[in-house]
Amino acid sequence: SAMFGILETLECKWQSHSYVNCGIDITVIAANALGSMWNVESGRPLWRQRIAHVVAPTILSSLTLNFERGRLLCACHLVSCVSISALGKERIGQLTSLIINGFEKSLDAKIKKVESRIDGSHHFSTGNLDGIIIASLLKIISVSPESISSHLKIVVPSILLTLISSENTDDVPSCLLGLQILMNIASQPSNQNVTYTFCQSYKRVVLFHLENLLDHSSCQIRQTAMQTRNIWYMLE
Image 1 (tube, one colour):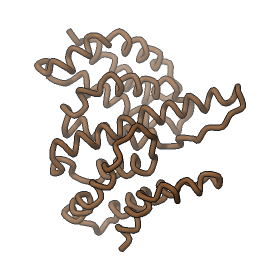
Image 2 (cartoon, one colour):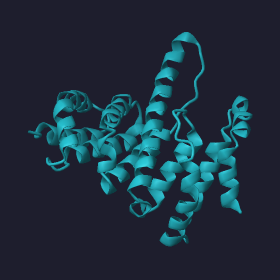
Image 3 (cartoon, rainbow, N blue to C red):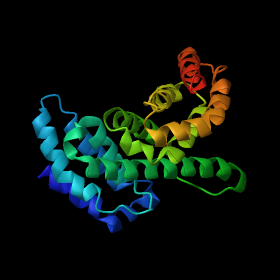
Image 4 (spheres, rainbow, N blue to C red):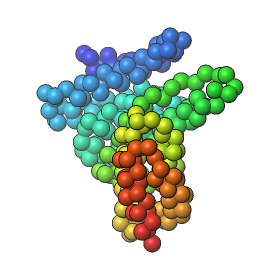
């Protein structure tokens, strides 16, 4: 079936590497195919949930420090298209760790790409990868905020880096989603000690970078940055 073809492709690392020189990552193609299947209009929630339970073990079978774009995109599609509350806390936690690790590696690749303009080396482009990662994190923090709590030291700086590096109108959706994540984090109940303590210690950094966004070329980002800054400023 098409589903098993996608899973086999994710497992065939040698096949993925053989396409690198051609600028093709076959695992990304497989991940996009999986996302297309989940987004079929006639697909029912139960059908999406059954597919999620089939593919989740394969997606999570390689929780390594390596940056595997195919698995990362599959995880993002799974979180975005399926009701993740039915997956259980353990699996949600694993998906969260995979996505956040991928977010960090994606930004690292973007930084290296900027540096390559000076030293002449070549690094792959992350494209719109950050956008789908941020959208996935926003859903996770809305459904299971405790899954994000232990990763705040990575999530918040990564979001801020995405915000301050936005250069054109294509970055506006990702920036707005990132600002919504910052608002959600700061709006967590004060009895959640981990989140509250982090927000208190990181408050000045967030306010500093949000202030810079008040001069952004996008009116939407300026307005949302102001709202986000007000929420963080009111933290006591």
